[in-house]
Length: 336
Image (cartoon, rainbow, N blue to C red; front, top):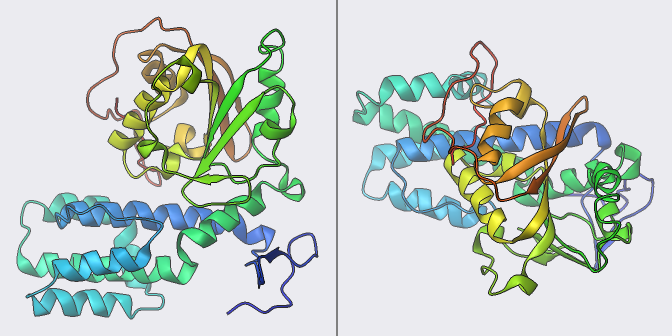
């Protein structure tokens, strides 16, 4: 329960309708975002192991809970394990198991006996409780919005404006699609380079339409396409490497010839991943006809701007390839 006296990071009360918006202190935003990504990725792995075929929805945790409960129907042991996991506030042993989940699943996949399945249901219940404790997608969105405020270093499209301005100098009437938009007041919207900016996100905000990009109707003609697609801190939020590849394929369908794609990822996705680095990312996108024009790494983020030149390079590998190994690496990757 949040106090009505809560203040934003600027010291002002933040109103949404008649309610006071949730406020997250700046020092907590990155921790919340990382924790949320960690839990969503672990939940996806557990659901794959348990063969839960119905797709979970990050925007509706009540629905997700109902899906999991339905999968345990008729099995008292699995149902009890799931409830036991959900009852945990914070459990060091379960946190350790989540960190070792990749190797645990690899080992147990060969056996997959009933006792191992109940353990996974307990872990799944624990993950669900932790997501609920964080506040679900709503809290993740607020943390992301706070991270874009000027007091937090500004939004990621500030660098985009610098890169794209000379490229669009002789292109009046350009349009842009911003996937995962969190604000209608960012640099993309205020730079004056675009005649029209379409902003979409999984949740509705002021000036932002609620829409899943993967469900957006495909363009019927060139007028429905865009000169720029901005995909800032979105690909890393997509569930798995195959779906990230599908998203990259789909972005091309919304681009006009010689259009641009701006991508921002957590730096660790290209510097600390088993399955991705900048070189591999560049090769994968080149197979879609995208040529990298600019890239930049800050302390926390990786930025890149590509142009669709429709000159395809050889297709990337059909399966994930390991480009690095060692303790503490993440499993971010893209498969086209």
